[in-house]
Length: 89
Image 1 (cartoon, rainbow, N blue to C red):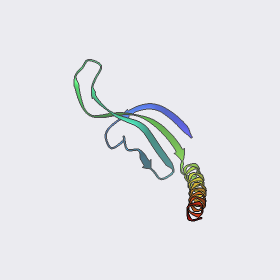
Image 2: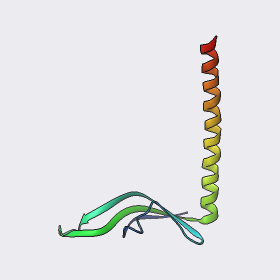
Image 3: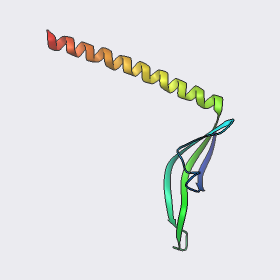
Image 4: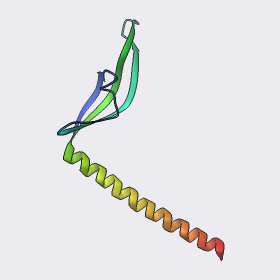
């Protein structure tokens, strides 16, 4: 993982997720820049925080997040089952 910090780019570069051949770019806090430092209007320029991942590293992170979501879903279902059983009694 490389934290590339705050970057600026075009609308096509400012997508939340860009998947390349070997790298994945995750962008957050995407904001359109409407004027330059002198107050002149700007079209199609965005500011965002960018993190670069190796593709295998990103797949591992997403897999871990998915496993956590599955576990949380199971815990929620078990809790709802207990609540329904209490209501039925």
